Image (cartoon, rainbow, N blue to C red; front, top):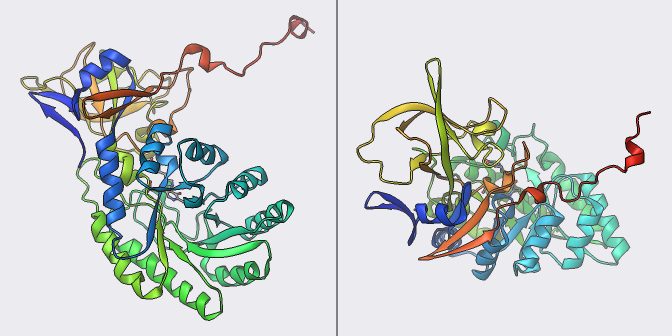
Length: 423
Ligand code: LLP
């Protein structure tokens, strides 16, 4: 469910026509719907009704300050993976006590910042990292709250780049090693065990892989409890998928109630780390047609957004629906590649896609762009990153200005004349 709909043929974001947003803010522009984000957060929160729980939005999916602010305002916690994400959450008014810190290669300075901020928990990904966190906590005279991210070796049936819970992946601590590592952590005066954590992948459409992981994790929790290790929470990570095309992902309530029924008897709080399901369908990316061309049998629609703006099609062969923002009725359809200006053959938003016939100046909306869209954007080909606009009813707010050309070389330095002399 989202708030991008056609009215009299024109595509609107909530109470604003997309054409108006493009006219005011230019293209490419990411357009977010506040109502959709709030709705999705509430659905994820209410899905765990019946158990003490905390939804920690995965900041990596979309880290704009205003989006984080909206979620913090609803009481959301946050799953972070860097000092940058920590600072963003705090700037946006997020509560440090609701932050979990994931990621396989946390640096000492990031660990120190998070410790000083007083986060809920470090999701520890290896024995080495446990040692580093212990050392930094000792240096600061603090006690670090920790969970081990345990790898349950479950196949989530998703794209191989976003499956993280298989034992061949770089993530987490092997299931078999978890208990001894917990025993070690329990001995340390600078570590405080607060939970257990897993995350098996992303864009997972079925409930079954989650159930398999939950069973294994609850078994581990029971064994830890029997060994005298007290736990407060079980963090089940994120990963629930969304419909980009014709997928039929499990409903949050279906997964949520499964979690509640399985975990209820274990006396643990549940933490989840959803990203995509909250923001994925809460944004479209607007792009304008620069022109069209034909090479052999192939027809290309050339647009002003490239793989630097939305890399998912190039990186994961991802499908994003592309629609004409103005009234498409009466236009013929044909098969085209929608490609950007970047000098790579992988620079496409869609290949062999049936689209209405479009021409120079037409405005297109690329849907499902809210998660891992702007967040993965780059300046490749020296292209300023897009603007981000939030729609709230009939109101639009620029939540990130389009980068300027000067922004592109901010921090770069020309060499002095004497350094340039030919040697
Ligand atoms: N927790 C952890 C530890 C994660 O690694 C992730 C995502 C999440 C939570 C949130 O997962 P979600 O609910 O969004 O599925 N760039 C890829 C997705 C990468 C996901 C990385 N980890 C894409 O565009 O499909």
